Image 1: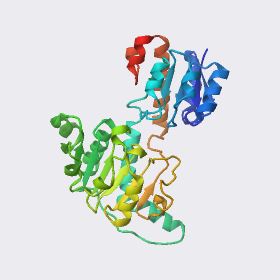
Image 2 (image 1 turned 120 degrees about the vertical axis):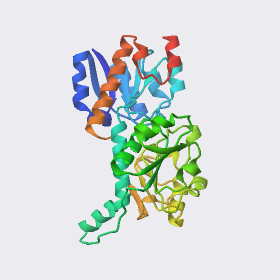
Image 3 (image 1 turned 180 degrees about the vertical axis):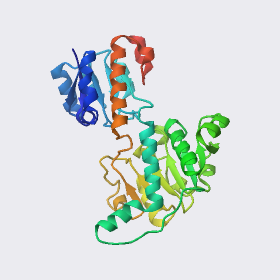
Image 4 (image 1 turned 90 degrees about the vertical axis):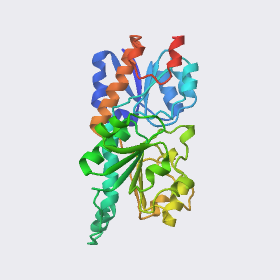
Length: 330
C-alpha cells in the first residue's frame, strides 16, 4: 500500500477522508509540517507522496520525495511550493481549485457583515458587562469593490448582489465577458483600473493570488485612492497587503477599517512592533479560517488524494497540475 505523508493540521481537518483512503490503496500518515522534519519523516517511512498546507517549502522536501511523486497542496494558493525546484526533481505539484470557493466566499461576507454591524466589538462588550448597542449600516445599496474576479471573487459578487442587494464593481486585469459577469454574478461594472473600481466603494475585498507582481498590491498609494468610508476585507493572501501602510492608513483615517483573515506572517506577528494591527479598534482579525469548514476540508482532501491516484495511473491530463513542464520528463 502506498504511503502518503499528510501534514498534521491538514490530516486533522479531514481525518475521515484520509482514513478512508486505505480503500483505494493509499495509507495516509499524519506528519510534521516543518520542512526538515517532514523530509525526514518521508525518508524514514518511504512515503511516495505528500499533502501539505500553507507552510513554505524550499529545500529538503524535494530531495526526500521520489521522482514522479505528487506534492499536493491542501488548498488553492501555492506560493509556499517551489514549482521550479519541484520540476527539476521530477515532482508533480497539484492544488485543489474549486474545493474551497464557497467557504472562502462565505467567510468574506461574514467579515463584511461583522464590519457593517460591529459584531465583534458588540459581542466583546456584552461579555464584559457593557450594554452598548452600536449603530451599524445596512448592506443594501452599498458598493462592494471586488478586486480579483476569479471563482471566489465571482462567488462573493453573486452573494452580495443577489443576497444583500449590493452594487458590485469588479477590478480584474484579464479581459472578461461583461454580459456574463453581469448576468451570472451580478457585477454592475468591471474595470482594470483599481482607482475606478474603488472610487465610491463602501467595502473593498481582495481575491488575487500572492505572486511577485502582487506583493504589497495594497500599498500607501492605493490606500490613498480608497474612500475614507471604505473597509478593506482580505481573505486571499497576507503578502498582497503592506501591513505597515495599512496600519498607518487606519490610524490616519484614510480608510474606515479592515477585516482580515490572512497575514504576511502567520501566526500573526506585526511587521513593526509599533504598528500592531491587534491594537486598533477598527480592525477585525480571524486566524486564516476562510477555508476551514468541514465541507471544504473534505473536498480538498478528496481532491488531493484523487490527484495522487491519477498520477499513479499516469492520467496526468485529469490532474490539477501546477508545473506541467515536469510531465515532459516523466
